[in-house]
Length: 181
Image 1: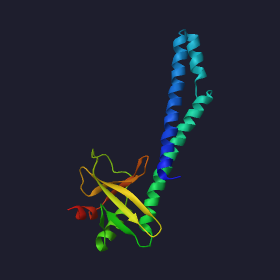
Image 2 (image 1 turned 120 degrees about the vertical axis):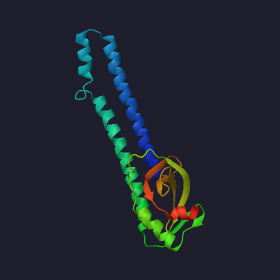
Image 3 (image 1 turned 90 degrees about the vertical axis):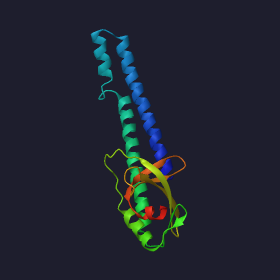
Image 4 (image 1 turned 180 degrees about the vertical axis):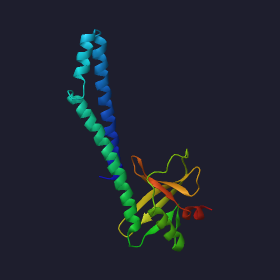
């Protein structure tokens, strides 16, 4: 099972948990609407208290499961990215069809190993996409580096798959800028 499939599982479990939660709330509101007197209102609320409602437990556990799957997927994708860059076997790095060599390559690897998981609030967004292929003797992986709209040296790194695009983090590098210019 690949990272994209795991992420899709997260989305499916999250959607299911939200639907079940909305179903629970709808049932509570329906019960309250049918029983307008004070006595029946408290019976409805008492029935839907989390401590007495197994359906809410199920919904809550699905929601937590989906969040755990999301965190594990991002962690797995980031570790896979870091392990590829740390390997001692020869690594070929190709940015938009241009192969990196020598100092550019070592600068790119050094900068990419210093990946941020959070960038902070800046109001910026990713703009220009650079396709980066990391090829070793064992495997080939493709990542998208998207340049930040405010900082030309900051890139948003994504792991593409057929189903979703998983954000790995943020990398500050000038190695890609030197190729593009």
